[in-house]
Image (cartoon, each protein chain N blue to C red):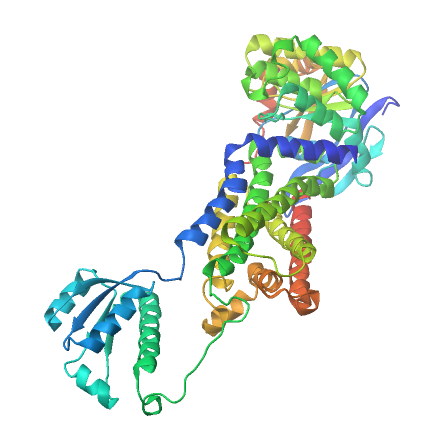
Length: 247
Length: 367
């Protein structure tokens, strides 16, 4: 374990009755890293993310996120992370400016700061003409880019992205990943799940979950070499096909 | 506090941008008030009356004139046989028949006159009211005509209605409508507003944010408290201006008790939202679990004392039942808190219970 790790999980486990959703996973994520968290549906990704976001208490094991313990300091964790889900995390019936102000507000930013970041953000995304229109009028790709910008408006140490690019066209997805790189360069750690395996190759390191266990964790290149595959898709299919869980 | 303000502001955006919410919030109360105030009334005016006068003469004609001259009855048919009379009833051309027998004029002098009143029992409520009204008019008239009053009726009864001397039904309906509106609007809207976030997935963002669950729930409910108080004020003003319904007791007490009842309804809405995952389920649960019991079992329309015992027992868990006693006490009887502390305590207990249960359910959900 390195000192600059922002997430350290040690035998993190979550059971629901007799079902072990997450089975003693151990890993660490370094500061500024883009960490891919892969797994088939039902592999336990969402449960693991919930524990790391302070939403769900582990049954066993421990983890620290941004230096805070998931068992005892979930509220501190929440202040230091950002989160964006596959669902639209924006309020469709509110304008872009109102959405930004709301998220800034619930993270306790001061009015002046919100205003300044809001205008910067609108200018960066080039959506001045939409700024006072409702989010529902915005094209899907822009909605997701906006949602990402808002998820890091309070400059969190880590941002969790749960399938952020599902349903987005390839060009927008590319732009989205550029935004992720920029965030990582600014020192924000990115923890991302995706079902698009070519995106996994953009990550610094990738972990693959199968049946609640962390089956492997390394750089995409090392994983491809290890399993003698040409791309991450084949690596994923080989590992995921060992699953004995039925959905 | 900053967080709470931002949250409440967002809630107001949702409310004022959703036409359906606005309609439920402001359209439904006025529609109900007007519906109950004007259309659904137990007062009778110009009921259709037929006459079968088998003994035309000075007295019988005078009696009929007397009945028609009241606002109660309008003469629509005169018949001359039993067959004709039944025919008029079948065609619904009259609600009530006054049958004056053959020897009425002669019997009248001897103090033995009798009159038959036949009412259309297919509408029992109306029939009862009309029969009683007709009887009243006839008795009064006879007393004035009889030369020797002792021989016909020696003991009369005089009824006076306390608190609502004219028996205006709107006096009863205004407290009832306020009760129903506060219950339905708050339960429905609060449960829908929370489940909508579940349905859209935005609730995840709130869970992940540093907002405390209590801030989320309070932020959700605060706008409805404000708007409901506003709503109650509008209903009271309309009731006062249009229907001349006064508030006899303390307006301050009325608002405080209303606030308590609003909180009861809101906490029920929150509880429903912990069970329901879609807006539609929430709506169904709110309407079916609240609307009929609130209207039928609260004592608003049917008196609780005349219900079968099992229903009387059930009525105890209907919050509206207790609030109705409170609001009628304040508005019509002008009573103070000392007469309604029991009901107030019950509502408080219910609210605390519902909030406790919601928090418990909410915590289970999070684990």
